[in-house]
Length: 542
Image (cartoon, rainbow, N blue to C red):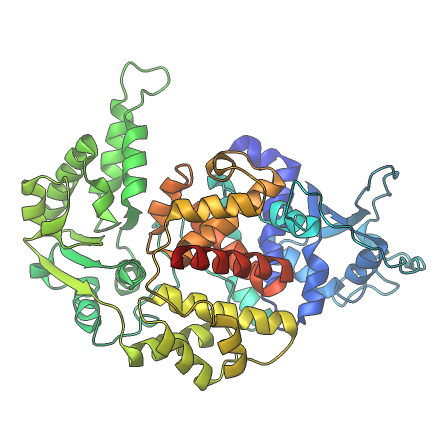
């Protein structure tokens, strides 16, 4: 972690990733203006200067003049409120000499408001380059090079813990500043201490006949009452709001009593942390101190929220550890909430003594939402995302997609992404056209089918997609495969991570968001996802 934090390139990548996210969400910028930032590549950070490579002199000129204020503001927020100034260089092409770095002191003839530093005159901009005919990618790849560059360099593939913590800290501290400048808060990051998603609250959980009882019981647990509800077991299919309820309990508990010690964890994280605790400490003859630290972490909380507990089945030692953790918390009258895809009595490879403890409390289920609830959910998603979508379009999507919340959001994202790319309003006709190949919901698509199809589409192998390589062409293919797996199957983030080479669920979530955002900003990304979705559905209907 210390090496990463001292690496100028790594620090620049993290800060630019934050800044780019802020710029993408800046409602005062047009889609065209936002596009100028997409080809920028961070190279290094030295003191208060960040070196940014741009594609050509025209891009450099626009960023130094028309978009200078927005760029400086985003960099300041991404750097934790401390001014950071860009120094530009033109990206080197093959057989071309490297261009000199142009520092921020050449921004304009007049210093921006509030900046008293003396500025040097801006040199005459170079004439815009002649249009260049972009050659098709070689036969060995299916990529647009600029798209791959954007996705690989600006966001990366796996989000390492150090970068995640840095991003969370800087964005959380700058949330109020961002809201005042751009009109709304940035995309919430996972809290590094509690692992809660601050956007998942009871206010953003839309109640309906399918989930109202579960929400009522969850709220009672969050209030601190309802001792008969301990433990609370929430079960139901994927994409129906179980994770949302767990996070809502944790977030409400912190508001109700700020000193409450809350911990949200997936079964995957619990297992991995327990395995790590068994390793011997350096310089010691046993790993007892690690185990002690693990026990303290999970047995000294007031509210334990554990998701996807079904994946602990068959992991004997981990289940034994969880059994003792459960007993310790239960005897101390601490709140325990678990989520599963099946009721406790149907959990496979769990000992009866643990299942009986789950059944000591209360078990509630969440079912697929009815039409009215689906419409209400879509309206909330559109409102929270700042989308302007007519009610008749939302009604259409709600009528056609009935299984879970995830597919509702996926359908809405497809429609709004196409409208954004083409600069046209969202209409029923556009929705019908966009979703005509996706209305069938009874088609089973396996994750292996998705990975195989994506690999073939991009001229890669199955092992390339699930393996550790992070070449640019492999990275984008892997991200799209994860997005499609989340969109076309009922698999949880944890399970998807396991299929893709044992990756952490936060990495999966990170990569899915990259593709979701990219569909709204890059025609190529939208086309990749759409073509692959159609191919997968056609294949599974034959």
